[in-house]
Length: 95
Image (cartoon, rainbow, N blue to C red; front, side, top):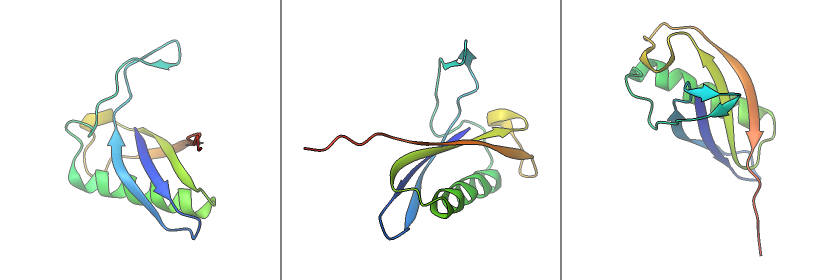
């Protein structure tokens, strides 16, 4: 699961919800579905909240993603366990 984020220079960060990215081949995402189908609201709230806190704590600025491994994938229940995988900034091209 990955959570899309935006943050400003003052540390304010917001999420743009999650994407289910379980279907992969040779470490490449083959299919991404947003929002993740079947993900319960309670788990979505936990994932997106943790992603925002991680991004802000790391000084993330601009656009990026925080990725998690989630027990049960997109069909995970409210109490499902998950663990942090990685943060990735998105390159911003300006004029």
